[in-house]
Length: 359
Image 1: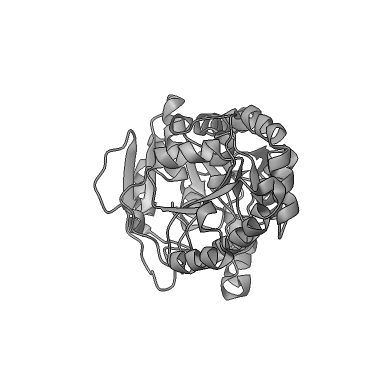
Image 2 (image 1 turned 90 degrees about the vertical axis):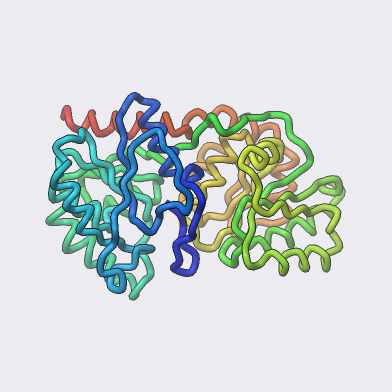
């Protein structure tokens, strides 16, 4: 649901900005009844209404199986045993997960495992993950269909699971909440938590070089997000003498953020760890090209469809390229955007399941 930072699941007011919520909306728009099952630790602080069913389940043995990494819920297992017959499809996240194991054992013919991981998690020298894939998944989870969210995830999981689809189905974006815009201003955007692994300091350093170049002298950098490094990053901006070119927006209402993102000439990403970066598909749906390193799984999509630039340790040259030839990248994003909606993702996932059932 959310990416934990430092092993802590953040407390949030709403689930409605999550990718999983958007996927559930996509299934509803396709005409399906939906029940979202989530760990109790992800329950939002405030009560809210949803256009589909949602159930929260308590985690057990949390010291051995941390909810941030491998939530274990016998309560969920009992729920599936009682109710699996009432569902046409059960979609579970990750082959390396207890919910997927439960579904594979209880309703293997109805289960689709939606795979995001493209590497073994590093915890305990990757041994728990390797054990799971080789000695649990192979004999006990071989029947469910696995559909990957990226090519990297497909290449990884297909080593262990023969029934892996060639189709790629990434998280969908709720297109109703975004505006696709081809008319851009001289601005660049960063949408990220202000924490170490996001490397916003590197982005600021590259931008400082860019604005001193004749081609970048009129640009501004807009940073959306908050976190413990905010004051340190603001000090970096002051030392670089670019206070008039960089704005920290902090927490920003979604509609306001989208308005700025849709008018930016590029969305900038330099994460050192995040495989699933939601601002990449959000930027593309806005018609905004992406400048990213190779860490996010969706970087392959950006490179293959020319939706921006993918390069590790990108800098001045890449900023000059993506702004100098911006119209071409923008046109590619606008053309590709419909393939990133939650409706398209939901329909593709269900159609792939049905086609396998017919075979």
